[in-house]
Amino acid sequence: MKVKLTPLNIVSAFCLVAGILMLWGGRKPVRPQVADMSGMLAGFGFLSAVIFFISDLIFRKFVPDLGKLWLIEGVLVIFMVILLFILKSA
Image 1 (cartoon, rainbow, N blue to C red):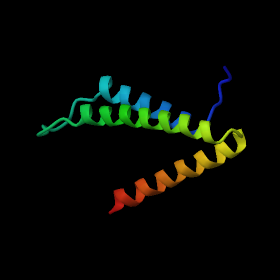
Image 2: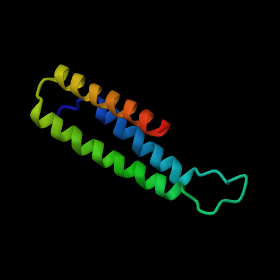
Image 3: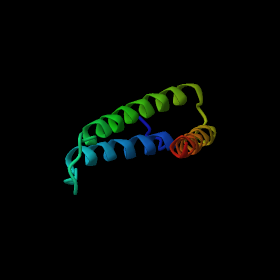
Image 4: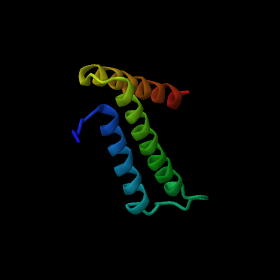
C-alpha cells in the first residue's frame, strides 16, 4: 500500500493533535468561567479530523492523479480557511 501525503491528510492530523491537546493539555482558567468549553472544542477537533479523513478518501477514489489531487485539496483547504476568517469576523 502506497502512502500518499495530501493536504487533507495534513489538516486531519493537525485537527487530531489539536483535539488531543485541548482534551489533555487544558490550562486552568485565570478567572472563573460559567462553562468549560475545552471538551466541546476537543470533540469538534476529533469530528473535524474524521470528516477530513473521509473526504480525503473520497477525493482519492475519484482523482487518481497525485498532482491534481494536491491542487483540488489545496484549493479546498484554502477556501475553508478563508471562509473561517469571514465567519469569525462577522
